[in-house]
Length: 421
Image (cartoon, rainbow, N blue to C red; front, side, top):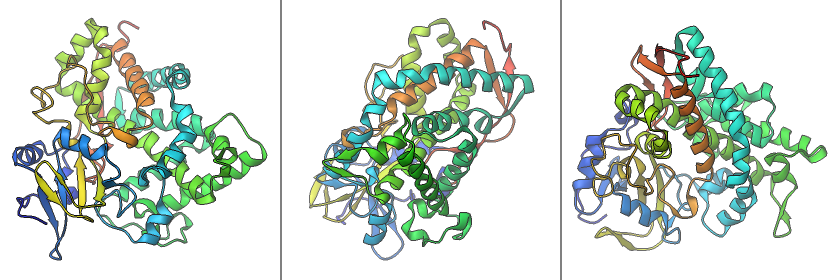
């Protein structure tokens, strides 16, 4: 480490995020010249904090310098055998990353994901109507969880009767991003937790489920992503069992958790900025900007880590080979140098990328287009019903510095539901 400032606030502490994004902390980070160093423990371990938008973009666009495949993509480092056991597309650099991404890219191109819009609308409508009928409830359980997991399960070919199980497992995966100890024997797990993504036994259960579904699709292929994963060859080779199961886990988690977090935060945004959404009702042409602002403001994934593969320099700071470089999307999305009055909620911002889907480059979120459809349709159906919300209890955030998720959000439905339907 060089003589750059040492950060006084430990961003490795999940308690810092128990009430959402600590904006003042990130503002202080961005106001410091160059990067700041966040120490961990007393052994010289730590990481460089990257909190300005342009710096996050620079790291994202240069995987040859800032690697996803070395060290880990989370702050803590894992052993080489664990890296190999856990590896999915998100943990790889080109060309290995490119090989796998090419396999699923066709399923996420615009003309294919548009086919899911009527399904999203039908499900969102039913969930919202049921919530209105009951006068409210837990928004996360009732609405934010079932919509995205249902669509990614449709794409993968997971039967409807297994979708609550997928929600349960992804909940347990997220629990693995916190400091809370997990039962290593849960779900019949027989693998050391250090070899499992998020150190969670739910990763073992997802692998077992993926393996069973894959065997069914090998015998009886369908028009779904799992059938494609187990049958398609890349450069003359099929995916290995580990590549397939890790891929399945990644798609279940990434296709569900990030959009769920954005949908959960949406209600808080509606309550905090009611005039913005009232304006949106009158000006539906602002919908595209509204969807982008939902994601920017929510910053569903708080960070990703990279590891320097060589000595380099970023924002005037010398970085040594092997040092951890952590991109804080929750900082970049509120960068005063990128966004005018970033803490304001403005659905009419000039069109320019935010970091809610990553900082660009090869790891740009594969499901960004699908997430935009799901968020737009849900928001349209909320506005159509003239729904307002009151927060009955303080939101319970996921105890994590990795995802800006909400465990529970109890709401009362207000307004005049049904008006304008």
